Image (cartoon, each protein chain N blue to C red):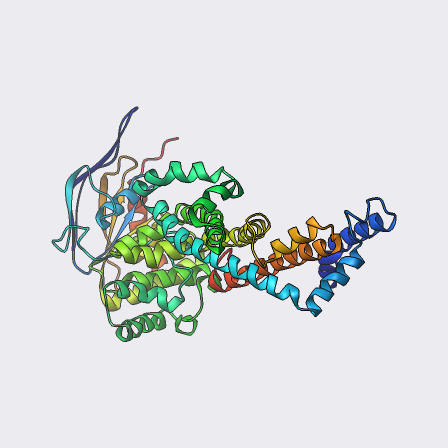
Length: 250
Length: 250
């Protein structure tokens, strides 16, 4: 047990040491890389003066909305694509086409449609995360055990009941794999939209503002916070997954 | 009652026509327990699927209680219990499932399910999930599930072949115990000759592909069956007679 914990922190500590050494010996100009100590001081003081809370709040809000829209649209559509070869044929080309295009490259298009407000950010996030969720939900149906569907058919399960009581739970483990990728992706997209579409608050704005005026320590503090947020979101999703898909891998 | 009327099944491939089932005629009376004994790959499973309405014959007809198989209620127990039970449902809710589909009131369904689980000694495990049970227990759950909604017929496709010897014998006794109570018309496929004789009123011996009925044997052992019958002279005699229908090439 003690060993396990040691492994857990080994690499982070190592990275911190390398960072500290680089900044201590001034291998990189402090203008571009602040020392870990400075970064932590800035992070803590931004919590003390409370400014970072607003940014975290705004970023989280956008992640949740964007991810939520993605899940509400992506899961049913993906399940339908996995189940019906007609829907699959109708959508396959479009999905595979957009899958290869970085969401960030579509910013201008989304700005054109949704303007520069929060709506564009929700939409871009939902788009990026939605594709991941959709594809995983579809695979969930494909990878599900065909035998269980046959069992259900011998019991005369049909239509929506077949969908809700057999196909959906069968696909649930894969849907959650999609969710975990999508939640991290949502955070990434939100941060990037905050950096480049512009906003009044958010961790992305904090990063770009600090970057523009060379407040390097402040910038890394915001980046560090983003990393922590991503870590927490992922763990949270894993926790929900283990509750909801308790049978996975057993 | 099951009546199979000159059923033939063949698959057309570019390389030619493969006949899997060749003109099978069979009558199984109401409440009768019939086992089908034949080599692996002899088309037994295809025959079961046709009787269960999961597959259509190339020619001929099957009637289950004078209904088309697709309209009849069929309880199907598959060999692979892991992939046929619902891991997201508890033991009780797995057994309740078919009754949920047939819109039996929940209270009544639970009562029936609990009675069946009690019969096989799993009542105390009713709130457990499949991954918390042993292989034998899981297969008992799927037997309970298959007969819970009082199907017209019960079809079992080598249900015990993944279990060890002593578990198999125990399962056979449990199965006969619940069968005795409900007297469901049962068709049981086995590649274990002892099992085929021990359970059945009649043993149908199939020839290798394409499957044809080679011979039908009556089992005159009294019911309820007991394990010591496995070594009785009648049993041994029947066993030899069945084995003699196979020609062994040297």
